[in-house]
Image (cartoon, rainbow, N blue to C red):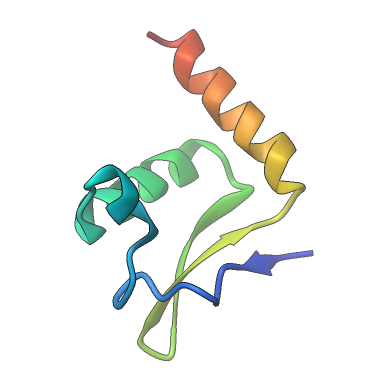
Length: 72
């Protein structure tokens, strides 16, 4: 089941603003993770960028962070 974060348009209200990230840096980070993890990514739906994921968000976050911190 694909879940979309449609409540936050990346073009209008960037969730990364809490961390002072620009829209392009947040999109770039999501795209980079999506190249190695096929359970998440960005999709352009009628001109509106949406973040999507295919599994439990907490488990996916743990997996992504575990992979990231194992590499540094």
